[in-house]
Image (tube, rainbow, N blue to C red; front, side, top):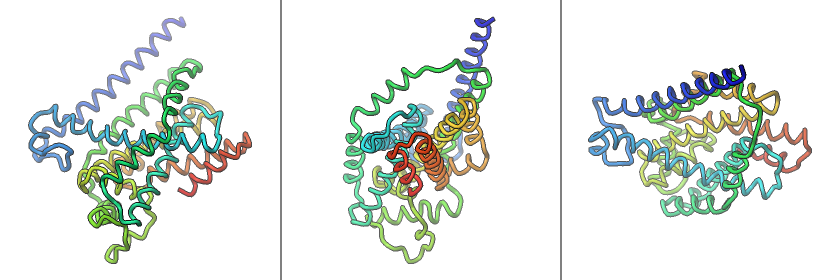
Length: 324
């Protein structure tokens, strides 16, 4: 009976994985049947429409660069956690906390470079390298811990919830390539960073009142533009990076749900967040809500863990997350 149940769970997992992969491939390739060429591309426009393969690789390249930025941020965040002597965290908890802290460092560093008037591509490249080197070797240990962690077998409900979350994550990452079209995205969330990128510095914009709003997420969009040397390619890269932040937010609510209740509760929370229509809209657009969600949940998680364990480092992490 147990063998039959295990076989059914594996079959459900394979079907869910196949469905997610099929949806991603179909949606990625669907761009090639558009009557107009892709709006923004890191490869020449003519080549991007020449074959389906080049178009697919173009999208993969965006994801690769966004993942590289996320990896560098994760490395820096792991360094900060070690500096604060935060220990005893589960692998997923440590990953999302470190990523949040690292993205904060990246955003503040971009702000500092902009205020200093040194917003250049070499500076952006050096910043990525410095962040990655700061946590040298720490991500490897984290991956090994993740591989060694063991728990009870996934129930059928947990597999279904995990499959829903995985499919929603795939859709989020896919639809992140849609061009921005809403007023606030074009006027403020991308408009202000594009102005800063063009001038090479962050200065007061007289004609854009929205640029006076807090700009944590906008600094990540500005960094993306500076890194690739283009406001159009950088805007698309920033959208993909924002989608990855949304997935990290799902990881944070999973960690919070698991800590408060159970693994099933965490999977339900992650699936509920990623499948919510409102969150899907902001996760695939150019908005601040994915990063706000990440920091809000991380602050609650860190403070809650501090109250349970009395670790002063976690209280500091919670304060930093709330401030960011």
